[in-house]
Image (cartoon, rainbow, N blue to C red; front, side, top):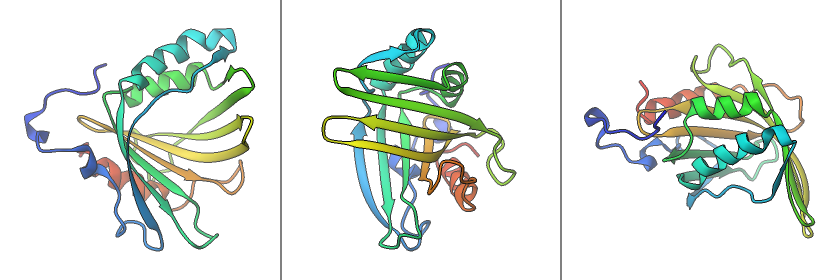
Length: 193
């Protein structure tokens, strides 16, 4: 499946059009990020995931993103990150990767990252074709050790993929109430509807 294609009805769309704004996230301060995504390097385990993750990494290497990080001075409001991705894997390709390799690790020397994902049934308020996953990321480096859990939602647009990530207070926390409404807003802005 080719992610980016010509579509005259959406020719005026730019990735930044799909980003959430301060009006969407009251109580938050938003920081804009523009980045070209790069996969984590290293040896992949288990062996059954080597080819699957390598194929995903090749797509990610071609991917460009614009993003906003939303943070609040209040501890009651978790960090939210939203990206609009172009040129990389489609939602269908990401769904396939997650289903084939729900847990894998990459290591290089003393550095390692372990990612475990669980595909969730999207709540009824979410876009019906959204991919919603619970993701746990464990990172170990010489300078940093972290263990974080988040809910991640993916929606497919005509020429881009929208990704919404909300950090969870606990690994088993339910999908946050506002998550689906934000994901629907993103889907509308990237031209799916």
